[in-house]
Length: 328
Image (spheres, rainbow, N blue to C red):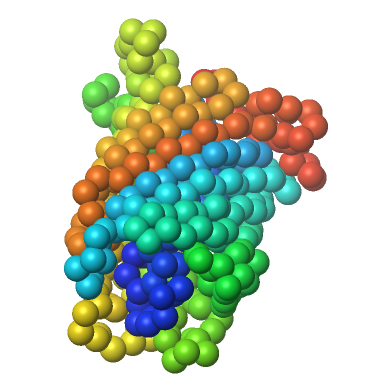
């Protein structure tokens, strides 16, 4: 599952390719979701980018809705997606994940499964006192593992290899109390389709994806700064943004279609509830331009913490000791 909306047709001309590109607008925002704890800082499973850690978790369901504009002036398309993602630790610093999504739309009506995506992720550096962490990952979307090309909303017939870098920093070590609840996370990806040109002559661009979140943890404030009313003390409001820019092999621009080399993305506020065994998150996503969508969309996820639900069985690493978590 690609980590950003990509609604434009990117040079494809067949109807099925256009429908698949529209589905990416709904399904594209999801990837391996997890919550990460560094020292006493909880980085939630944010909806636009992945958090910078590895964990044993299950995201089910991950919902997306966005209305996309059709460049030919026909009525806009309503895009929906329900995704899932299972993440498993191999060691405390190394994890794998697998996921997919079912996508459907109206005007015109179409539906289908996206390709299966797998990921290997490694935490390179972590400083619990500084609430800082850096990780890297490689993911692979397996072409033709979703709905066949004969489906009304087919999966991509080609595979895509993506290299990723993540970072996170909490400001619990700041001198001013008002800064302590804040945290930031970021992600940068480079995606390389394994097939440059499709059978119909359309092309698959190489692209970069980059995003960030600004978080204000009432959970952290309640534990380390001052008491928060019980109704709010497990909430983490955020502001999030994610963008994708084609960098090569994006094909020529043609009349009646969106530009093939334009940057797309969404920004918006979100809020996360962090329970003992699960997380619930909701985000209002605003497209940055016509190519990214029309009006506000919605992202939402329920994420189950298997490392807390079954810490001695399903939720522990395959090798070595479990992660040393702080206190929620």
